[in-house]
Image (cartoon, rainbow, N blue to C red; front, side, top):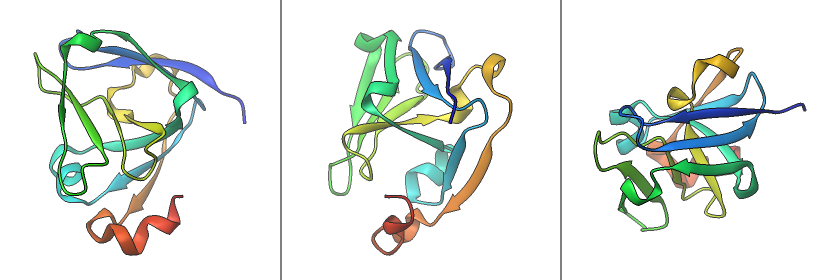
Length: 125
């Protein structure tokens, strides 16, 4: 599968990133408590496919439940453009809604039942 380097960031532009992924990535729409409230669309990638290019010192971290997921937010605008997910603690989940549109040709969105995480996780790992 061919990949392109996508760029993106938070709302205010302080935090920026690059992610290597297909031009039409497959993303997950999760219904867990935090994702449903935020409208997060998960573009899950390996660690070496993701780079923070600006604003790393402007990130703040939030953990809940098992404490495995590292939810990272811009201190200025409050947007969570990416985080280290519980399902892939050695990788990243990029919010596809935070990817600049210039390199995206579309997205394939699949629902994930994160509200019942333990029963559903085998679908994506």
